[in-house]
Image (cartoon, rainbow, N blue to C red):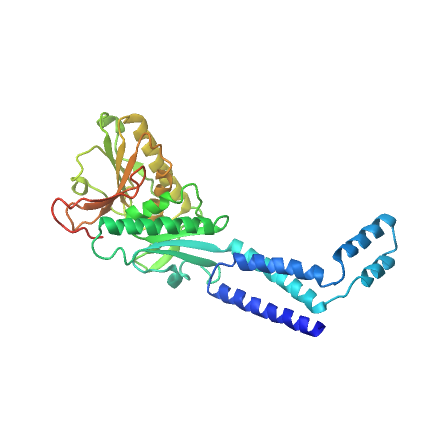
Length: 377
């Protein structure tokens, strides 16, 4: 019987080990494995001594209180014990493996990738400074939906995909390290950010199209171009109910781009817009704060503004961060923030939009519908 029990326990260990290692290699969720192994280990170790575990504890306590010689205490414990060595070893191994994998899971990156072109960071992990076993890529794949003509139904489907996946990512990665990357239409990136408000992202990865590599934003960088406001709010129409906020990082948003908007325009830009301007997390946080402070000042000085049209030329990481705080804006003041998709080849250049906050969050608007044109990504 003892031999049979030992064989069963060893077989259980082998099977458990196989599924754990297999899941590890495939980068599946390991939290459940770790907790199961720790629980099994704790369950097997005490019972491997046989007899009544309560009797053993009573013998130890009595020996301590009565100052019984340790040899007598051990003899009393031995009389109630029927040690199953195989079970003890299996319990210790399971406990050790469980603790090891639990530590691994807590240290692991979960990288969110909002992707419309089929580009996976898996294929660029060396350039991004990632080890194969140190991260799991969580992809929100909207490539199929973004092909061809953008319609209200397509936008609604993408909104649903984003909402469901952002909530799942948020829950799955609670108290774990998170990363972000993405190549998708800016309105959808901002929309995704609204479902991650008050959450922290540890690392950001941007694709450098000139070198064909992913690079992570550095932890510190003392010198970087400042994001400056180019518009004096005092010179704008203080009775306006709508305003355009144009943010230029990658390309300068000029009057030709904005001629479709007959509204007051507030410009934010760096001195020399270009690709991959944002290179550090410090820079990203400062730009985010600059945008937020500008919106707050617009609220305080242009008291009648209830709708903001947001034009953004820049990297995905800042678009995602802006989405995070747009969800927190006072809806009693600026009840609508609308993000626009740009194309130089189309007229108007900002040819469709999404509402980012408020009661109409996710609302798609076709801005070419009056001319009968198709709305492409």
